Length: 249
Length: 94
Image (cartoon, rainbow over all chains, first blue to last red; front, side, top):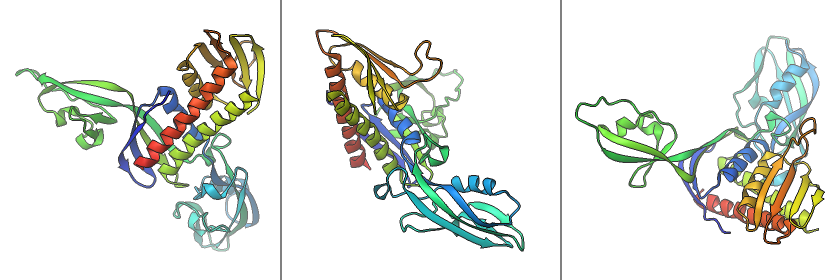
């Protein structure tokens, strides 16, 4: 059985994208979504060795905050369980930001430099060395590369005719992406999520297009959307391979 | 991925797949149901009397004299082809 997939991007930035895939089964779409959330590993601070912490917060509270800071993750260079050493040294009065963290690997750095870790008063100091480990979202949510991943059916809008002369026009609210009769793809945000703004005075019908899924993927900055989706599909393929080999034996 | 055969006859198979969850099992089940000679395919992560979640147990029933293990191998191969096709299509568009 060969399946033809057809992928089309609707919106795309580095961390955020919306794309349409045709030819997917619901099971496959959901498998990819779940793999993006739980199976694509990212680096995250896991063990912290405090040299000095005279801030107002306990070591553990700071360690928790550190874990939630996204780190850029070049997946080709690391394997599950690999660690990268990072360090920080900030003396008050100042606010320690994620951007103050220095790393030992060139490809690994904080994805956002403006995350406050803690505000330090004069005389207070935060100095630590920490190990960031590569692990999966399945084990801890701080390792989730995909932070907002979901899909909806593509919706086809057809014009059935004109609205009756004395009919009230009611708003037709809809979210996601629609396909017009000409095959054009329009994100609902472009017409304020109200179909009557796109087709004033028309009688419309909206149906789901079978096998066509519009994915919305947002990453935490560890890697690009393209990398996340590709890696997610790869993990499923790897497991299929593994199963095939295990059965053959 | 460790496999443990619980029950195996000519046309039925119950197999425990260690370390997997819905992510992979549901996709696999979906592909199995589209495979030829498969009469029934399902999986369960919480079988009766197990007292909680276990490793998923895959059940396959075949028809037309097909060996369930062969069918499973075929389905796994087909799934691999599909993921590769998806990656190609996605990377081409990206």
